[in-house]
Length: 394
Image 1: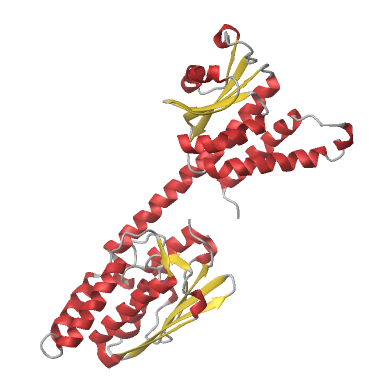
Image 2 (image 1 turned 60 degrees about the vertical axis):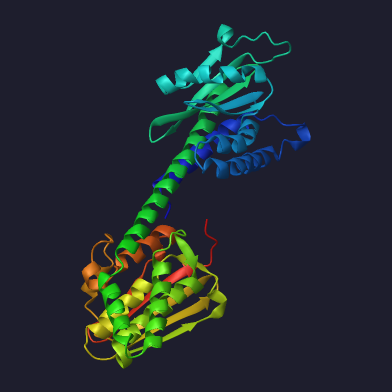
């Protein structure tokens, strides 16, 4: 299902397509029959070339990369993109007007409405300068004017003003999406920081206590476990970004299982089966260890007896399919729903680090269809499944 922002952007793009195409003139009568389709394709293609830069936000670099494509869309002699501090980029002839662009945009920043510059306000003594007017339109994000798009030409008609207005609306839509991308990245970073902060202090305490118990009786085993603990914490507390490879994530799970095996002894059995071709697949940071922790907590610790944890990673064409299963007590489906509550802070006492944190991040990154799936019932153990697309991360 499309988001509201996507529909708004599509509507804005469709509207300005009409204005831009209407300004195009056929090169010759023999091209007349195919012109609408060709003009539509050309306009969409140019817009697609400008969009990636604008999705980085309104900066000097993004404006410089996008401005040539924007001028091609408008078909004018020159254009300027400005922010509150001055000109971010200029493209076209008539560079003699560049220094005046911030002054032309000042009215737009104060009024928030399109502004036409003509007459004495744009008069130029430069020989051969063809510029006789400019249409200046605000660029907005969340209702705030963050910049201006100014189109300079020999004539400023009502049609040009409408076209510049629609192109500016499309640019504003791209800047809105850039702001949404930035907000989502900040939210994901906050979720990851929260995940690191929630690493169970009981696990740390139990691991160090277990290691200490081997110091005198089996120093070599204590040294190996201490190295495993160091590897696990190095991965869990690293600052390398929101993604890691499936191979690194499984290495973290392996260290975690070894430490828990030292604690539970023969009571804990585990198997890990992985299709080697999916090891390079990028996955969200710490997306598997919380599931294994949950399986041990509910499959082993809660029973007081022994149990098995099974981790299976399969290659499923465009996706990697992962399951973490225990043969413990299982749980009521209502309790499982509470563990996947939309608030990642909920369910921490029941689910260790919190399955909700992993579920929310998966859905934020890949879409609503990629959340965790929990299969459980009282006395039947618990199986948690997730799917990860084989997509490059940004």
